[in-house]
Amino acid sequence: MPAGCLSAAEWKLHYYQWAMQIFEQYSLSEGACQFALAALEQVDEALGPIDVNSRRVTPNESATTVKGRLWANVFKFTLDLNNFYDAYCAIVSNPDEESKYICMRRFIIVLYERGSFKVLCDGQIPFIGLAEKVERELAWKGRHSDSSAKPNPFKLLYAFEMHQHNWRRAATYIYLYSAQLRTEAASKDHWHRSLLLQERLNGLSAAINALHLVHPAYAWIDPLLEDSSVMKEHYPTAGIDVHAQRSQSYVDVEKLDNEFVLTSAEYFLSLANINWTFTGNEKPTPDAVDVLVQAGLYDMAFTVILKFWKGSELKRELERVFMAMSFKCCANRVGPPLVGNDLKPHVLLLTPSKDAVGIYGSLDMGPPTQQSRGNTNWETLELYLEKYNRFHPSLPVVVAETLLSADPQIELPLWLVQMFKGVQKGSVWGMTSNEVNPASLFRLYVDYGRYTEAVNLLLEYIESFASMGPADIVRRKRPSAIWFPYTTIERLWCQLDERIGRGHMVHQCQNLKKLLQGALLSHLNLLRVDSDDVQSSATC
Image (cartoon, rainbow, N blue to C red; front, side, top):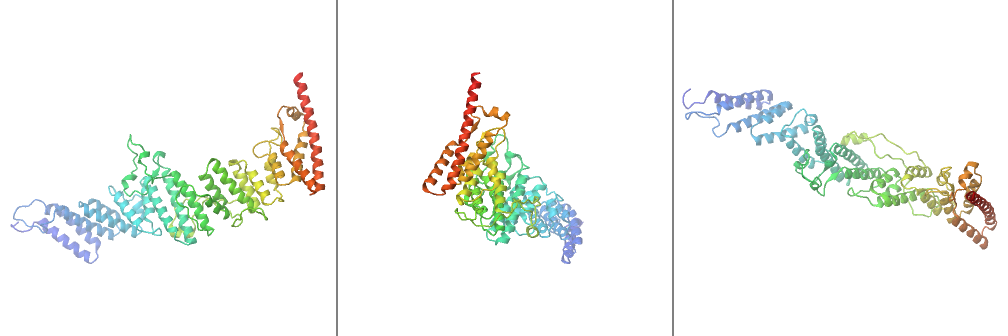
């Protein structure tokens, strides 16, 4: 070849690039791609070592720069043809790091805008060495988009990380999505707010499920940290205190559970057109429980109580709720005013509605619905008292006392009276048993002037004691086998005397006093006989 002339490889490189540009001008991407690939085959030879008399088409460009430009063109043409895998191969083949990064950003944006979510999330493209760049771009887009973006970048990141078994990262991104929903819900009307809160419940549930896949010692996230390196899935190295790695902003499964419960309460209140926002995920104020009770959201109120209160505080909150429910049963109550309607059965979780799915999508986590069987205030009170009595055995006493204080003339329902009388047969005799016993009901009757019911209740148990069968009589004669509220009986006797002395309901009080006197004489005679029998058996 004559001196000063271009080599054959350089001529080919020049020609292929020129042809590529011609095809590109006419939007013939497939032909342009072929010429770009052909040009790449000539780069090493055309830009390799040459003698001093040769000239180059691109004397100021290195082989890496030329290859980077040509691979970027190959990427562009394959992307125009929707050949995503070939476009990805062009990215990873690009030796120019700056060009590679620009192409990667463009690749993610195009996939996102064209709705090619499976390409991003289902492993069709491995993104070897580029996963963090994918995360960084989608996270940036997520922070600069609202929750109604279709698709939401944070939800894409959740799917992307779940497919790669990066559970903590997945939990972090879906939690960021739920936090975004929380911020936007505050400024919406009731209907849109309900949809946003429902979607937020989906996000929190997904975050909880993802963290349950992580070892319990490392099942926490720190959503405030931007550096993705803090969410590495490998466990901390030996010798490093796990707890020392957690900053004050960390969120673990327990905090997520708390936030889920509070968001559920906020969601159901929004369905009732009540605007109430829970701040943080710590213990709510008692006022929050009051609002739930007033709205008739009893299931949710009890869920909040059992989640955030323990011990004596739990009992106190249960008492407050059952007092409010009891007041609702009294037509002529004198207790504190309450708002809201009768019980409207609600569930703790709802499956996403069609409208919500259409706007925000779904994580498909809705459980089957459940309903309460109570449809009146009395039935509701009975239902929940039976259900939560095990957490506070004295609740029947609280309910009965509340009803009598609100309306002293009210007739206690039979099911409530039976809770006081439900002594296990054959175990004890008299009017005592556990925390809720006939003696408690007897005391309430005396305290609130229900003397007829008090006398009838006492006579019922005295007669039951006297009419025991032969087998029970033997055990009845044991020391301390029986107990009656004698102090309360004495107080009843004195109150009857006082009424007679004041001339109030004299005839009725005299009859009650006569019944009481006769029953007590018979009972004391029976006790004297039992005592004599015990002494006789002891001397034998």
